[in-house]
Length: 254
Image 1: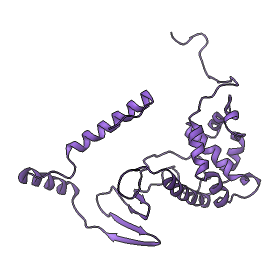
Image 2: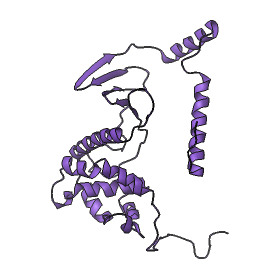
Image 3: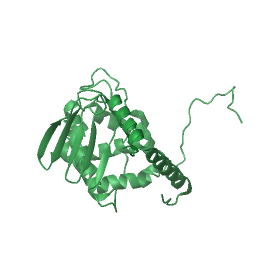
Image 4: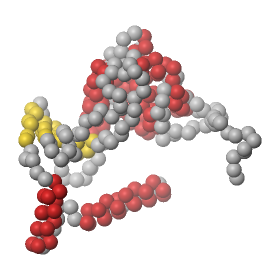
């Protein structure tokens, strides 16, 4: 089968009123609501004029659209077609969300940071990611997306990626972070316990020389390296188990 060359397809539309293309949003948005995403947005986000009203619902609709793959304001309409209105209470139109999003300034991004940090804490409390392990709960925050932000009036950045080179680990009693984290020089560490934040200086070292020295010592002295090949093998086994679980819909023990 091939596309028609006399009547080329230029667009496709799913207009069946009973169609649900993003049913997977139901558990995700249920978790977001249980963790207080909408309430936190209403509490911490202050956008002026009527365009900023119901900030929680607008943030919820935007997040849902982004999870469904939207990468533009018009794409946010994908949470409104078909029977999506049956699964979700009055999803907002892209025009409404666009008017809201265009009002956001760099200060509002800082308010959204406050929402995100509090949401992360609630998610950590409600969804333990290392249940059964005799240690503190740990979340690893890794962001490697670099997405251009269009428009000359954008404040604070020209790209969706902030340019920060940071690695942070959040635990139940605080967090520690490296910033910059992956540079070869100038590494800095901060540790937070409760309300106290301590900055620690790290020695300047040649990373590659230290790695080669360590591996050489392991060969000469018969020691096990800090990152043995077995770790890579375990990673591959875990990845294959994830694929198998996704394919079969059942739990795969590793």
